[in-house]
Length: 189
Image (cartoon, rainbow, N blue to C red; front, side, top):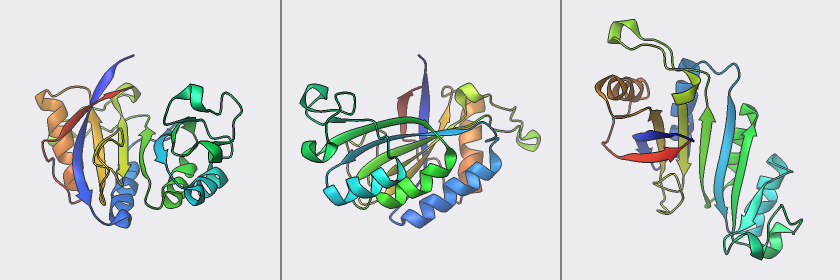
């Protein structure tokens, strides 16, 4: 397992603005074989019902731990709220319905891309699948839902904090009207 650095490039109180930024970045990236991963904390039965319509085979565990209830154990998630969702390798078209289902609950939605393209005029080479990721945190400032918030943050991932990677972060931020805030989190891949 390796890590990337997830750089915050846009924080907004408007979920629609964050989703627009994600769409713009997906339009730049190579997404031919892309997939999406979900991590969330679901607290209410209503949100759970909406999320299960999007992800009927939801993978989850009770916030108190797997031994207190999990999809692996065949338990009913409604009996174990709040739950933590860890659902991986889903089709890209599941992302926006999942985001819409969240209501006030927090999540991180990560798009695993095929590549970020080269940008010759900026001196940027293409970035392979191994480091081409994009994450939207919903109702949370961080990737792990430890900082609940009323706003949403778009993060782009870089291999490390060297100059070439930071230049790409700045370039991607400009494409969505954002800016690199200097806030970076380590993200296991």
